[in-house]
Every structure is written in C-alpha cells, then in structure tokens.
Amino acid sequence: GAGVSQTPSNKVTEKGKYVELRCDPISGHTALYWYRQSLGQGPEFLIYFQGTGAADDSGLPNDRFFAVRPEGSVSTLKIQRTERGDSAVYLCASSFDSTGEVHEQYFGPGTRLTVT
Amino acid sequence: AQKVTQAQTEISVVEKEDVTLDCVYETRDTTYYLFWYKQPPSGELVFLIRRNSFDEQNEISGRYSWNFQKSTSSFNFTITASQVVDSAVYFCALRRGATNKLIFGTGTLLAVQP
Image 1 (cartoon, rainbow over the protein chains, first blue to last red):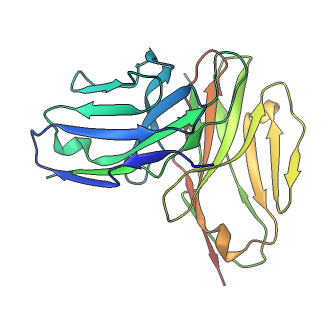
Image 2 (image 1 turned 120 degrees about the vertical axis):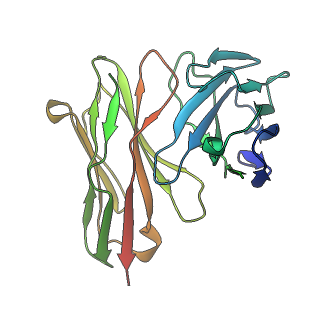
Image 3 (image 1 turned 180 degrees about the vertical axis):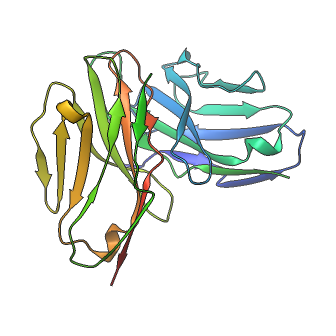
C-alpha cells in the first residue's frame, strides 16, 4: 500500500511568514509523529499523536509551533512567524497503536523548509 | 539522560568489504527499544530492525547482522560484502519503554566505492 506522504516536498518562505506542512499517514496507523532534521543531524522529536489528541508535545521548541490532527488521520504542522533557524527537513512518521505493543515507525520523504 | 552516540561520522569502504557501524546508547530504563534506520540519498528513512532490551540475541538478515550487548550498552550493525547500494546514512535510535518518541544518534555516512 501507499507509504507516508508529505506535502509540499519543498517550501521556501520569508522570515516572519506562516507555514503549514501536511502529513498523510499510512492507512490504519493510529499513531503519528513529527520530527525535525537539521543538516548533518539525526531527526529530533517534535510531537506525537495517538488518534486525534497530542499525547506528547514535549519536543515542540516554542509556542510558534503547533500541530493538529482533527480527524485522526491527516496532520498539519503549523509554524508561525518563521525564523531562519526553523530551516530544516520536517519528517512525519506513522505506526500502529503504540500504547501497548511497540511498533516501528514508518517515515515519509519529508518537507524541506527554507526560511530566507 | 537518554542518549545515542554514533562516533563514526563517515566510513568509506570498497565494495565487498565488511563494515561495522557502531552505536552506543545511554538509558537508566530497564525496558527500552533500539532501532536502526537507513537514509539513502533520496532522504526517506527506511526501518531496518527493532530490538527490545530483554532480547540480547544477535540477529542476521541476509548481509546484515546486529550485535546487541547490554554489558557495553552497544547495538552494532555489520554489513557483510558491502555493495554500492548500501551507501547511505545509517541512524541508530533509542526508545524508552514508557514513551513513543525515538532518540536518534547523529548518523554514520557509509560510502561504498565500486
């Protein structure tokens, strides 16, 4: 079946603008994750959804970052007043329910965000 | 503190050589999970293996093998008879038993020359 998809694949925005990044998880996966990967680094956790609710948002760097998953499927990561330091690849992953048994996370291709 | 260290930033080998990628982790949890992911030039992370802290059995899958040693907090990955298609960045990751987030190392760039 289809994997995790993310749109857009690339986004260039000016400092101070608002951006939305979209993630479409694998069908049937109830858990959804957002990570951020800077050049030469490993992905860093941002937020985790179980169904519609954010179960862990401890990785969001500040209140300019917000994510939603209103129907328990597609998720949108929203960044307000973007800064040059927000430039990175934003990765989305999904998995089966992780509240009991541990399941591996499957990653999408990412959205490369460049703030000029 | 939870941490994953991949001390090898870059490794270059010639095709058919064996290569081992090192991963050292830190956690005080008794229940945890370890992962390896591959990130080819296309950028998409590909899951390779998951290991839980109660299972120290080594695993082999084709040319890939993993050596998990709790005594040294290591989870090393060996590719036998490397191929050019193995060229990628490889990440080791840790997940605590009580959480869902993965903590990644900084990755090792493997370049396999023909």
